[in-house]
Amino acid sequence: MRALYTAATGMAAQELNVQVISNNIANLRTTGFKKQRAAFQDLIYDHVRRVGAQASDQGTILPVGVDIGGGVKTVGTPRLMTQGTLSMTGNDLDIAIRGEGFFKIQMPDGTFTYTRDGSFQMDAQGRLVNAQGNPVQPTITIPQNSTGITINAQGQVTVVLPGSSTPSNIGQIGLTRFINKAGLQPIGDNLFTETPASGPPQDGIANTDGYGDMQQSNLEQANVEVVSEISDLIAAQRAYEMNAKVISAADQMLQSTAALFR
Image 1 (cartoon, rainbow, N blue to C red):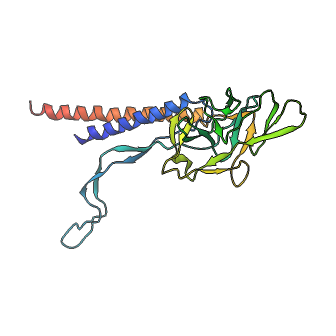
Image 2: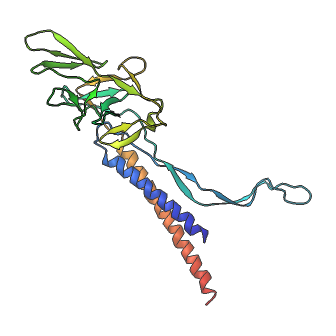
Image 3: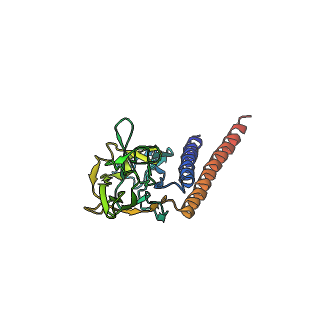
C-alpha cells in the first residue's frame, strides 16, 4: 500500500527536523552560534488523471486531476544568520560584532576560516588568537608588559606601552562579509569556510561601508529562541506521531484485506 511508504518519508523528515532542533537547543550557550531550520518539499506525483486533459469526445476539459503524492523530502537545513544579543563579559580581548561581518582566522595550513565568535586570547607570542590558537587576521601582536588594551568600533587596537603614558596603535582587526552568508560551510569550532554558494570573501573595515561595528568586552550570544525551539519540537513530535498513525491505519487495512482471502 502506497500510504506506508508515503508516511515513512514523513517520519524520516520529522526525525531530521528533531535532530536540527536538538542541535539548536544544544548550542543555546554557544558564542556566535547561528540556528538552523529544516526545509522540506513534496516528492514527485503520480498523475493518474492530468488536470486540463480532454475528458470527452466533445472536447470538455478536466477541471481537476487525480494526483497522488509520494511524500516529503528534505531539501536543506539553512542557517539563519540573524543578530544574536550581546552580553558584557568585562574581558578586554572579547569582541562582539554588531551588524554584518565575520572575524577572519588563519588556519595552520594557511587557509582562512570565518567566525562570529570573538572570545579571543593571547598566545605565547602575544598574538590575538581564537580558542584553537589560530591567529586573527590581520595579525595583531600585543607587546609584552603593555597595558590598557582598547579596541574601538572600527577594530583599531591601542595599548599603553611600558614607559609611556599615551596609547599607541598596534593594528586593526578587519571584518569579512559574503554576498550569501547563509551559504557558508560550518566545520565546527564556531568556524565557517567559504563555498561557491557564499560568494568570495569581501574584506573591509568595521563600522564603514555597511560592515558592522565592534563592541569590546562583549560577546554575541546564540540567536536561538528557546520558546520557539520548544514549540517547533512539539510540532515535529506530533507530526511524527501522525505519520506513525497513518502507517498503523494502513497496516490495519491490509490486515482486513488479507482476512478476506482466508
